[in-house]
Image (tube, rainbow, N blue to C red; front, side, top):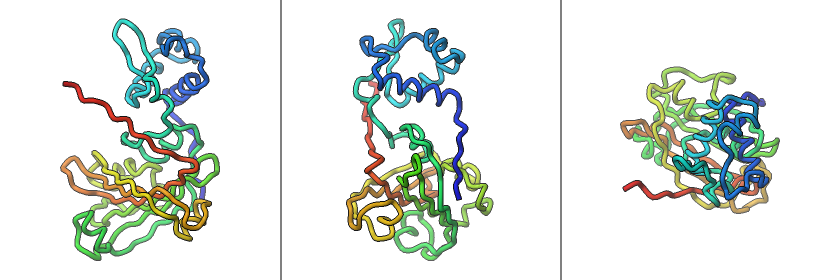
Length: 246
C-alpha cells in the first residue's frame, strides 16, 4: 500500500522555496534575507504566510532575526539536511529535506512485550503490544524502516489500515489518552541484517544507523518505544546545539 500525501501547508511550501533560494545563492547579500514585503511579493503570498515560514526557519536555527536590522542566515546551519532535535515525525522530516515522502508495506500486529520493551515502557513482561511496522520512502527510495511498540492497555481505540497517521506524534494524539510531550533518542551504529539489507537496499552487514526512541507524556511516563533503521546513503542526521540564555 502507498499512503503518499501531497498536501503541504502553504507556509511549509514557502519555507522550502526559501531554503532552495538560500542554497542556490540567490540570497547571498551579506547572508541577509530580503524583507518580508519583498519575500511576500516574490512568492505571491501574504506577509502572514512569510512570517510563519520565517518563524519555522528560525525555530530550525537556519536564520536569526535581529530587531531593527534584518533577518540573517546562521551560516552553516542552513546546510543541515535533517534535524532530529525537533519534535517531528520522520515522514515530515523526509519532506523537509526535499524528498517526496510515502509509506509502503505497512503492517500491524499484536505481540507480547519482551524483557527489554517491558523495562523500557514500565509494563509487565508479556503484556500485549500493538506493533506498527512501516517502510518510509523518499522519492521512491526506501530510506527508513521503523517499528513502533505501544501497550494496548494504553490505547483508546484500535487502529486500522487507512486511518493511521503518518507521524507517531499524531498517532498518539489520535489513539492514546495523552500526547507525546518529548522523546529521547539513542543513536546506535550497527550492521544491517539480511532482512534489513533487503528492505533498505543495502549490502549484507553494511553499517547502518539504528535509533531507539522512547516517547514520553508530560508526566514523564513512557508511551511508545520505536526502533528505527536509517539508510544513511540517503539520510544524514545533524544536531544543532545552542547556548541557553543566561
